Length: 311
Image 1 (tube, rainbow, N blue to C red):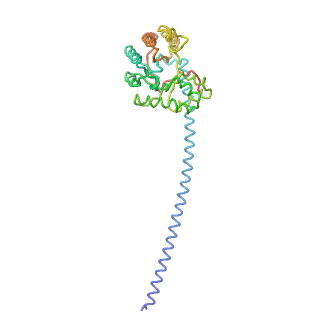
Image 2 (cartoon, rainbow, N blue to C red):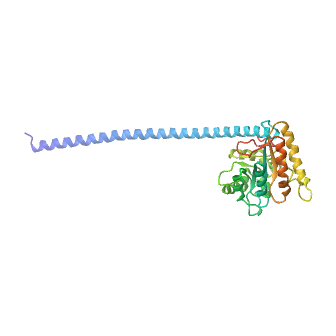
Image 3 (cartoon, rainbow, N blue to C red):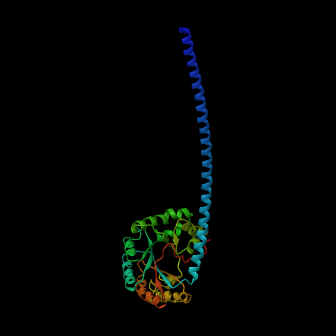
């Protein structure tokens, strides 16, 4: 028979064994969890390294993409400027509108003649009180297109003198935001004030850097290869270019491109003082039709008629 002391010793022994087993289990658990934690830390470090590598590779791929895009845009743009033989398409364009006095008249003529055009618009309607940005929607509703020109025609040239980032913050981005509010969607086409060659005149460092950055930011810019001459002081008579001279300028230059079956991008203006441009528009459209041209609006995929190499 077990005595009370024997029972006590037995119970104590069992308790000690249980405590020892618990300690062993705890150590095993600690070892397992500790091992898993260390493994997890190693895995996390490995993933972080992979993420850093992927980010670096992504940056390199983005840079390669940008470079190829610029190279492709440059090749297309230069060919279209010189005459690429891709067909007789006329891209009529108006800068510096939309104006309260002329835009609707130009729209009515386009509609009557079965033609379309692209407006590169200003946005600072506080300074340029002739602007009516509500017409941007009307322009598009009648089958035409709206693009970005600049915030302030006069200040834009001084903005070229600063850094590329300065140009975007002081001019381009403000113009883009306001015009997109007017039309209700993103705008991906633009024209530099004075055309892209003007940039280098004010800042040689930005001559190619600024056009390249516009392309990197997802916008296509357009120069032109046919000039109406309606904003050239050398052609003014009593403060404006005569109607017949505007017609002659456009059709005379267009004829050479028609002979090579090439598209044209015609620069005209839609601000006060350009009444003779509006008067010339019906004759320009009829004359281009006689040369075999059809009409289209510019979009992101249209070659840019680049006057300068930017790559």
